[in-house]
Length: 354
Image 1 (cartoon, rainbow, N blue to C red):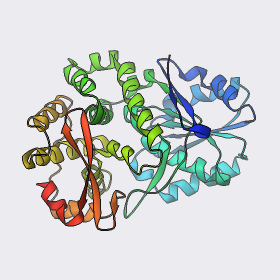
Image 2: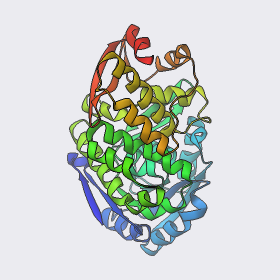
Image 3: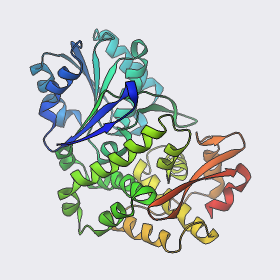
Image 4: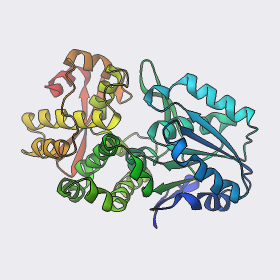
């Protein structure tokens, strides 16, 4: 068991990482929240058939009455309509302010379920149980919860910290290869912005089997980086923006294809490579960085481009949350392992898209 403490004062919590952790969650949640009597599991149509019963049994054995809410898997479910339906199910299920919501799934479930917890009765406790690599290393940690609007990704949401994050790396064994690599794009991002050694470790694995054999170490390294950044900038006004490397272009790509063409990690991969290729040419990034990113992305069958016209990307980026007035903050690399914030006038953006 690896324990990472996220020190946020009154909102502090632990991230627990271990293979085979899921059956012990009920006991741990009961100890953490002794007043809770009901537990709502929010999951999706892919994950619930695999793991919801095991989690329910663990919770019931710990004395909880359990409600299970299942949404359709996929980014298309991360919207106000589905959120409204989830909230109605929590109300009909008799959930009270002293009870607990558990999100069992990937980033969509964690984001939407966390926003439901933040909204229901003005806030009930929630616990993250991420089942995808992307959720385990990134979206489950830090308290960003949200849904998408037609105008853009994650435009309705809140900062709402979980009471705990329980990461069972055994759950990755059932993850399709595409989504294992999707999450790995975020791990590569962490290496790019903060840890060159992590980047090289990921680049050096012989295959997915070796990656999975070392996955606890990779997950823990990413969670430590994110925890330390979030501790310094909980509300994403400065340093935490480093975590958005690749995301400005990536979110635009996702939205352009209606969240059905590229996964989140694939969008981030495209964003990291395309932006670094350009900043290297401009002279802001060390020579060779883009090629190293390209090589590791290709190793894990991650895309390098989306085939979207620059003008269309810019139109979508104009609605990005990182845009403020007539400026936007891009996250670029000085070199592998060292990211930096670059505030630009909006009129300069086309220069950074090639």
